Length: 480
Image 1 (cartoon, rainbow, N blue to C red):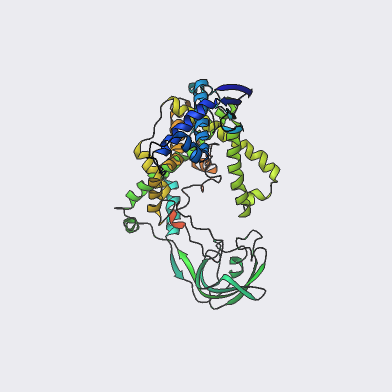
Image 2 (image 1 turned 120 degrees about the horizontal axis):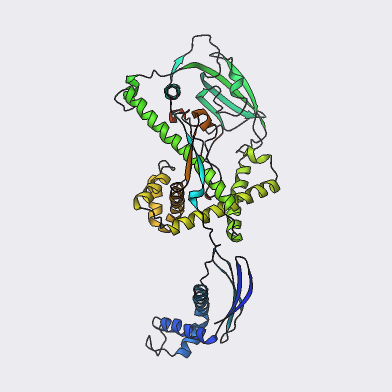
């Protein structure tokens, strides 16, 4: 094996390697002998077929595999000898090869950068300190009461107002022609909930039971149904009933209906849930501050190939989000988005490498229980298909790496936070929730968009299911 350095600049390495024909011939004989054990040629017993005949008959067929094997072997030997650590799979390009001659190929790759040594004890972070007051729990119960309301039929002659629930029939048409998904009977709609496209609900304010109205709206240009996007539609609406929402009475009976012995036990449970959620917000703030410091202080060259892969992944999701009408992206040009998200890609790669290095240096490991918990968390994202998700990971153990990365990153963060200096910063609950600190830290690469902001101001029982005739979301499907 002859090695010639073609270029070496920073992390980028480029070499030419020449493999002697004798090594290729030797590997060819190994493969042909193995084939000779299996094939049948008239006049010869398997395993006793002359090499000359095997080469004539099967030489071309096995040559491709032989070259791949030799290139892989030589590449691994070279990398191990030089003690290189390629960041990505090396790029191989065969320059020249003829049967019976030497093999010449080039190998190009980028190394992992030298990780900087960080003295975490010199890092100071501001830890948000908050207190959950009784009024905060009272506010939570007010929302729970509203979320568990009961409908009370409005008095005869009452006019519908925002917050009322109306039972309606509607039939939509564009240019007098009905369209699919634009018709429903006895549909329950809360005015002001923004379940329907803008303008629909407001035009029912003031209506009485028995009224018939024509509601005219214009579908957004980014509407998911392209045949309706940007078009004006008329809805013939009949109002059958109007209901007020009467909040549930929060007492011992209500607490028991939720599985608690009494109201006081329920309050303690709510306090615990709020504390757990707000502790998560505090951790998000710490992580964001920590990541900002690490990004600023840890200067190192990054493998451009990794940055490009990360950016391309982000860009693909951005383009999909733009197609879906993400208004936050509409005001920016592609050039502006490119600059912004190339910075994000760099941040992600840098912090990902730093955290992975910390995990390796300090031998951070994932327990079976943690991995099982991660699988079940993934499964919970696909209601009704949980078993499919679990089965997917059972049949595809290599995909476990998708779950292991985030777990190891969190463990690395925990390790760093155990070493840094913390300065407590008292803060009100309102201030804490103004910015939940949610930040991908530049290390998440599976999803560009953040999860919905969590606050104790809403109850999970406030969630509403949207009808297919309005703004719809496709149901997530379990991986196959």
